Amino acid sequence: MANCLLCHSYYDEINSWSTLFSLSEPDPVCPTCEGKFESIDGEICTICGRPFSKISTEYREGDLCYDCVRWQNDNRWRDVLQKNRSVFLYNDFGKEIISLYKFRGDYIVSNAFRTSLKHTFRTYYNSSYIIVPIPLSSERLYERGFNQALVLAQLLGKPIHEILSRNHLEKQSKKSRQERMETENVFQIEDRVSVKEKSIILVDDIYTTGLTLRHAAEVLLREGAKSVSALTLMRG
Image (cartoon, rainbow, N blue to C red; front, side):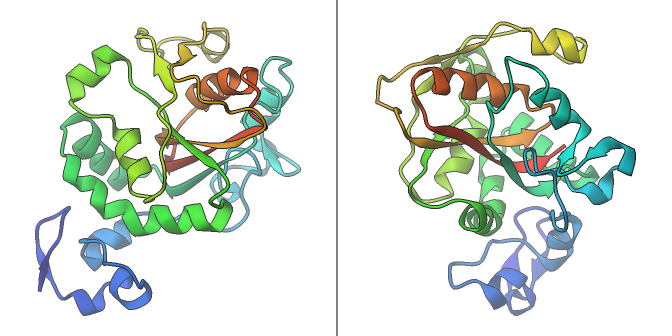
């Protein structure tokens, strides 16, 4: 018997997907909670990873969703982010768990994602990529006590390069899409480790508009990075 990390109920590990199909230590999540996460599969936007099954056909143009078409039509942002791949959709259960993890500071919840995050990384990327977690501003780090993106990156069990820093910025939720796109870049290169001609993966918890990831990618490309992609836990 094991204790579920998310709902705290006891369950028989032999019935867990992680136990049956993973050679590594199983994630401490019961089958009920595991079933509430909504994995991303089927046809997806080749840039942001949004599943086409979740949007109307009018919001699709070829292999891209309408949001990514707009990013690509903007001279500043065209091809800045090569692709994003997410593990789960940001459904109601995902929002509940992210709130528990990110805003209520339950650091240990991250262990529930180890196997699925590693699997997504192996599916779309390889060890030649440099892994860079999205940083928090010093103010946000003080509020939360830890950087959720860094913790997720550590689950991959690979070298991590904390080469970015971030200025504090007021919340963007009340701004229009255009206003957010024109916002000044909040990221800087903190460590002058060379990224020239390197392929980089940014790690973060949620892909929503994609602006944060593109801001970070923009800075890295200016430093000579070959390409910048992203690995995120949830796709909003």
